[in-house]
Length: 71
View 1 (tube, helix red, strand yellow):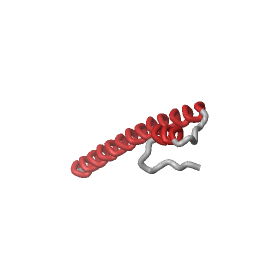
View 2: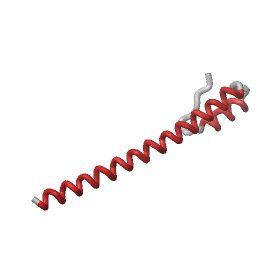
View 3: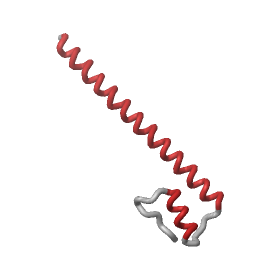
View 4: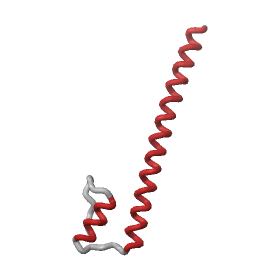
């Protein structure tokens, strides 16, 4: 079994497999690329949600500090 290098994209891995004669069926390769694109999209969404959570936490902390000053 051919393993993917840690710094190798899925597309590069599939190309290397083809070049070395260890080819996947085209439908499998296409599905892998689709899944990789989905992972990238979901990773971006997670980063966006994390940034939103950080911003909301900072706003809540500022609001709490303002309330503490008011009392």
